[in-house]
Length: 219
Image (cartoon, rainbow, N blue to C red):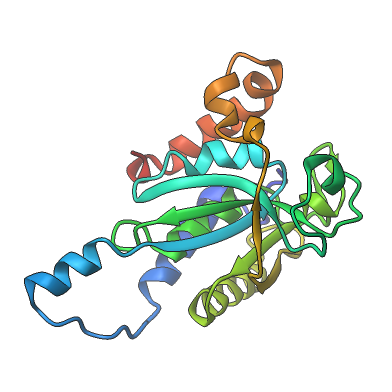
């Protein structure tokens, strides 16, 4: 991942986004103060869908976060129904490798997840993450509602205007359509194959760096 501009480094990006989150006013409907309503709210779950390169890497990251219930690797953004991994690897289907993240918004906010998304990959390289090249590895946020769209666009603009990264962010922000779970052997990959070289030398260092920055957000 490229180092952000200025000497603030990536930790500066973290501080900046957290400050921006705290200064953003969002109006939500006020729930009725009844036990029944509180019970319903406590069970509410939202969905975030992010593409940030190889889903093996970022699946391991988001599985660590308090408030995240499930993380499923899969494919979104393409034109072919029920694509296979072999098909999406050609780049011809238009799909990106993504994570479908089910989370509790009372524990972790979408803004928090955006922060983790931008930290966990290089959002300035077009259709490329490290040695993985192709549209299937593009940086993308598939928003599920207008609030997610506004937050994603707001923070992308702020990060660019503050020149937190050395190059402009190329993250695509587009409406969610369909999500296709990847094959079973892709799911929970790092936890089940942690001793493999790719996990040891690519995923583990990224995960350890992430844990140091977001220690207070971990399960």
